[in-house]
Length: 251
Image 1 (cartoon, helix red, strand yellow):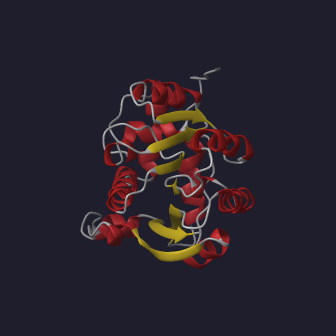
Image 2 (cartoon, rainbow, N blue to C red; image 1 turned 60 degrees about the vertical axis):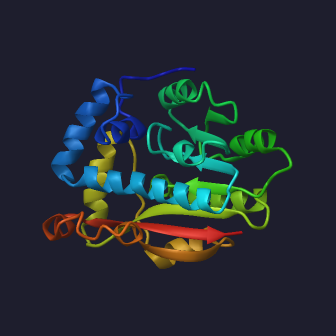
């Protein structure tokens, strides 16, 4: 597995911002530059991770046993594997460094795997999922922290193929970014380009359309989901060109 540590990767930048250790100097430099443009980025990253934890607890409460997790970060403390320790979970990421670390973290978890996957071409991942889950296709699917990195063509294709792959009764959790200012796209992509990526903000209405034929159950800001409306100060909120939203849907 080829690893390029000469360029920053958004997953490792995210890991660094969350206080993790699975990153390189190039990722830390990119994070420093991003924080100059979006100083409250660590708070939004924490909200994303807390949303994963909320979803993990909800899925645990209703007895979810099979989970397909798409590029939501390394399964370190406070991830889905902590809330669903007996479940079968297939984690994925495009970054080979994350995959190597993920495999090590899950080495003693026989019901969990971490695999490399490019969600812009989801068929190989779904083939792996078919082998991993077997005939059980009633799944909980996590798309937390990835949907705003995919353009409409790739995101729509992924969501439709997931819908076709999953059995009725499956559930889907998504986080996505919403622009709050005309300059949001320029500012967001200026910061994102430092981690070698583009960002695609969407309105709740656009996300609801994109997620079809999944049926949306709830969609609201992460601070409301998590009941932490005071976590982001009014000054930080006004300085941010975007807001993070969470969406839950079912098959």
